[in-house]
Image 1 (cartoon, rainbow over the protein chains, first blue to last red):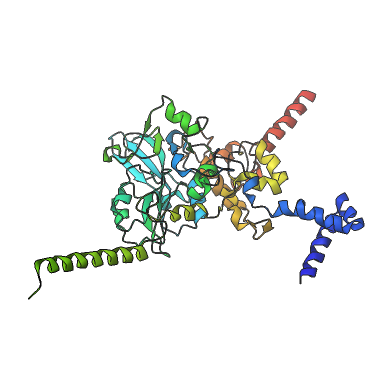
Image 2: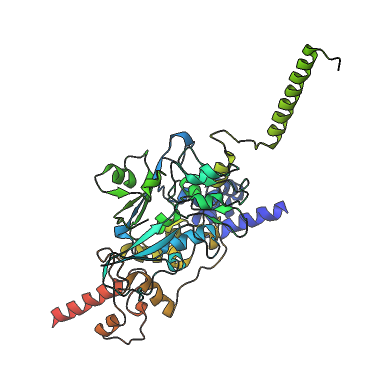
Length: 276
Length: 178
């Protein structure tokens, strides 16, 4: 069996058709040794090393969880409601139908100051038709992407009776799926309605700002796929990051439901006062 | 009862001691290993979350095996669009360095629906300085093409103005030559 595999590997290298390949014919042993160290090894590498480092300062060193801070900025003035983020999010986590970790709402404001909000299928299919049920002149209309606010004073963490949801030292609110008993207190506590019970695991699930991607130096999936740069994510320990510059700058940023004292790490740019 | 005051006190102290030790022992059995490292939760859950494999691998991974599409996509106005949005996630296509599945390619009417997801003028919530939108079928009429045309019959899906600009160049040079 082992010899078979070796033969196979050797033939593969010969058939590569390169000059090196024909050299292997002459010097099979040297070729094998070389091949093991170079080409073959490289092709088996995890793709991570080939991917761009979108969140700098994480890869290639031990992650100091106690000295990290991140922020998410949603620029409403750039959101076109394409739903790329929703699609990417659903695919990244295989989110079951009718549950949403992130979604895009459409706000329509009439001259009577009445506000109409809808989000057909969470924006997963995009917005193909205008709202025809509004019987007044429209004053303002825009899209608002929603996701976990990563509160610094998270109500969901406070109510969890089993310590299954928690704020990590680097500022992410995560769920421990081993400990969660599915009591759904956190779903009721969350002012932003970002939590749901996963129909298969029966534990609670929510947006994590793609913690697994961030720890690999990658942007959250929704940020990576956003074609207009409406979603921005970055480290506040990195002064060159876009979010650091935005947060430091003079632009007006708002958070959702500020009066609840949740201190979100998710900021909105261009959010009208009607956005909740 | 012939027990002295001191004896009763001792029994009480022993009882409390046994109950406390027993309680602490049971607690140590029930408490997950990394509980309480950073707070009242299982610290190992953080690493478990961090180790979930990624399913979207950015446009760079797509470009590495599809240089022809990459060249066109990177040069066009659609360069900020994620390959994976239209075609599906990388993880459904590649595992390690092996191809494990074929990603769908949108066809005919699907393409027009996909284009109008972003480029439909009727959706007024779209900031028009961010995206160029068209009205259908007005656009087809003004361009004097059949109303059954799909977007990709004039526009290259990966670089929408590729053919349009080329056609303009040809007609301009033809006019100059006259």
